[in-house]
Image (tube, rainbow, N blue to C red; front, top):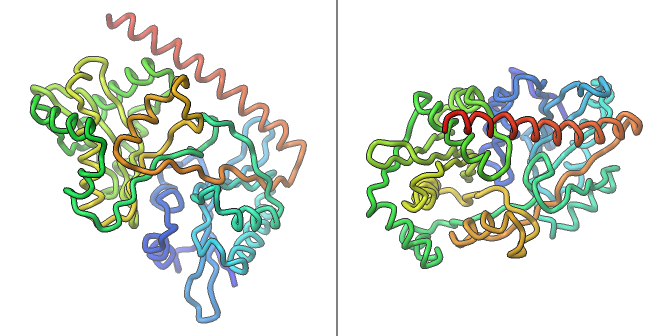
Length: 358
C-alpha cells in the first residue's frame, strides 16, 4: 500500500527516514527546501500493520531543452534493499507519479555499493538501465566515495586508525596555532571567497554564497560551517551535514596561502569528532575519482581521504527508467554540452577576477 507524503504524514515520514540505516539527508524535506527550483514529492509504502516499510522522494523539474520533466530520486529509495515486494511497490508508485507528471525519465542513484548485485538485478527487473558516468565526477552525485565506519569507537581509537603522517599533520596544525571555529552566516562570504580560490586552483565550478547561506537556514542545527583561522585570519573552511547515523563532508575550501599549516587535516578531524559525539555509524568523505592510479590528476584527493583510514566505496551509480526516448536522448546530450560550456565560462570569469585582485 502506497501513498504520497502530505501534511498529514510528513512527520511520520521524516522520523522513519532519520532512524532508518539507509536514510539520507537528500531524501528529506529539509533538503527539498535547498532546491526551490524543483518540486518535491515523496512516496510512502506501508506494511499490513500500517507502519512505514519504505520511502522514496523525488525532485521534479521541467528540463529546459525538451520542456518535459525529469524525476530524480537523489540517494533513494530508503527501505530494506533486499525486500523485493516493498521495492516493487515503490517503483510502481513512482511510475504512476511519472505518468501524472508527464516525465520523460525516472532517475535514481541509490546509496548502495556496486557489489550488491541482488539490488541491481531488482533495478533492472523494474526497467531501469545503468548510465555510465565515467570514473571521475561526471555524475550528479559521486559514484565513488570514501567512508569511515566509526562503529562505536572512541576518539582515541578512531585517531589511532589514521595514517601516522595524518595524525602528525593534525597535531602540527594545532601546534602552529590553527583554530577551528563553528561559524554562522556571517562567515559565509569568507568561506565563499576561499571556495572560489579553491575552484580556480583545482579547476571546478563552485556555488554562490547565497547557496551556502540557504543551506545553514534550511538544515538548521543539522548543518555546520567550520572555519579554520590563523592569527585571526580565515584560511580554510568546510560544510558538513548530520542526518540520522551519518555525517557527510559536503564542501571544503582552502586558501592558497597557509596550506603548510595543515588546516584541512584539523578541519576533517573536527567533523569526525562531531560524528563521534553523535554516535554516528558513518563519516562520509564524499567524492573521489574511480581512477585511483597515481598519475590521475585527482589522485591527491583520493590520497588525502584515504589517509584517514576509511574505505573506498563504489556505488551502483545512476540508473534511468526511460519513458520518452527521444526527449531523453536530447536532454542527455544537451545537459553534457551545457555543463561543459558553463564550466569554461565560470573558469574564465573567476580567473579574470583573481588577476584583477592581484
